[in-house]
Image (cartoon, rainbow, N blue to C red; front, side, top):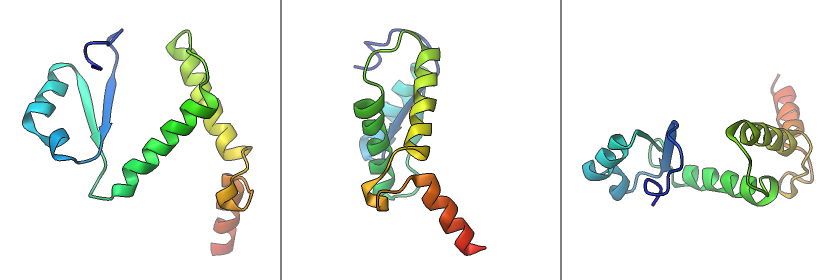
Length: 111
């Protein structure tokens, strides 16, 4: 479906886990024929793919709420979203702290 509905020819990445269907020669050949770079989780850590899916979901549901007019606008919005997420957004899982505050505090405790 992605190949058939492709609207422009740009560098494209296909992210997946290491499921047999994604590792098959037939699937990899199809990606290669369409200039799509495969990107798979390293090793067999099932949580790695879940983390990528969570980040994509947060971007789509909380930040990228309308269709961008071009790739430059999308890049800007993604960068801005990441900044807000790491520098301004309170996280319940971090005790209502901001991620970069938690990282800085942890780093200062190690030194």
